[in-house]
Image (cartoon, rainbow, N blue to C red; front, side, top):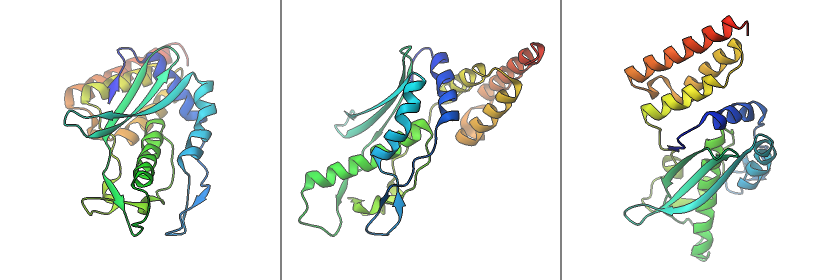
Length: 215
């Protein structure tokens, strides 16, 4: 994960955005397993108005790793110019059971599938994993074992995210809720001991400031 040098405005807007965001409605049926799922367009259409109203936007593009492999870059930007982004290797995919299909369509399907997961991950949207069996990795593992994984931020980056999130809270209740949701999302092991102590100090200082102000 990459972050701009300053993130205060970004994470203040992001915290407000997540409080207003609804989960994507499952609008399609997978013909293979007959389950419903929300496609990429549904996820984008659900999130776009809420992103825009908070000065946020998300863009995705194809990149290239140092060893020449394709990557997917997903970037969330704020109108202030602040941003956060993630990048991971695209999973190689081959056709499963439909040898006559255009290979370009298979590649497009695989990219769209992975874009949906990356988009949902960076904005924190829940959506159902039902459409994975249209492609299968060339290594012959099942798609569920090769779902796109967001690269975890370093301990120092995680502390930076936590600090910005707590700093955007204006009441002690919001501060406590933000702390709880943060560690549910990132896990207790997201920071090393030193950074975790710093995070505790940030939370304590800001909470005490809010109490002093009567918030």
